Image 1 (cartoon, rainbow, N blue to C red):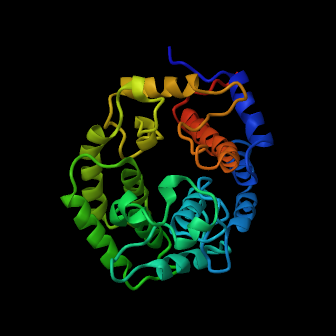
Image 2 (image 1 turned 135 degrees about the horizontal axis):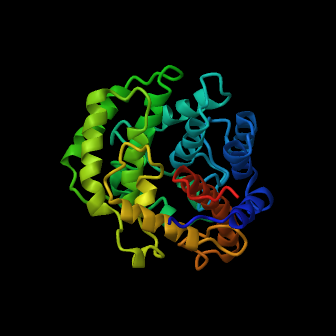
Amino acid sequence: MAKLLSRAAYERAAQFMREQARPLERALFAYYFEKGSRTAVLAALVPYQNPDGGFGHGIEPDMRSTTSSVIGTVTALDILRRVRADEDTPGLPAALGYLIEAYDVDSERWPIVPPEIEDAPHAPWWSYADSVENFRGFWANPRASVVAYLQQYSRLAPSPFAEVARQALVDDLMRYSQRMEMHDLLCFIDLLETDGLPREHFESILDKLRRALPHSVETDPSKWPEYGFQPLQAVYFPGSALAGVFEQDLIDANLDYFIDQQQPDGSWAPSWSWDFVDADAWAAAEREWRGILTLRKLRTLRAYDRIATD
């Protein structure tokens, strides 16, 4: 019999979300689990958007800067897409405009963070000086996610280079090795889930990812406590186009692991830290990550029918 998150454990998680999560994740939890409104989610996003249309203000908790960034903006657009934001959503055209302006013509890429990131506490992997090296020249992260959202909302902010950028991105993916870095893969999953993606691109990306995932995801449960790419991060709901890449026994083991990792306060904790850089800033980021991760775990567990109903 499958292990379930007990009703009492779910209620602890729900209480954590209502009392400890950021207003944004609180609104998202209400939207997904308590018939909350999309309007409340949109309102909770407003404080993160800047006049230039981009998003900052720590929307990605490991970057405490108020400054807009490409990664902050695609983080917001991911939320908007998941709550099915429509073309009348305030702030959405401005966010797309920010991404169009952030495009670097010379490199044909999107720099993931701006220099101003250095003006506020941040995790060491977000250093501007090291960003080109850390993110492999931005070939996939954030490039694939940006292309995804420009495609998703192309009627709102038509981009003169979006089609060319998408084709170049797919061409690069086809030349890439079978083993891929987790964040690059997640960005391509963003693209795979995009409405209106040309069928030939969808099929090419799907085939490549299905072949790459077995080489890129950690399948040894003893290593799951470490920071890394777990099966359910790729196949986070049963109806995923990537379903079937992993044996059901592995998916079940990962679901069991999720349930076992719940903390006494009802939350799920991050597996990384940068308290050695700035303990106070990390303490704030860690609290925020608990809300983000708890929401993700609950959504995945519910999608796989792993939350007890009584």
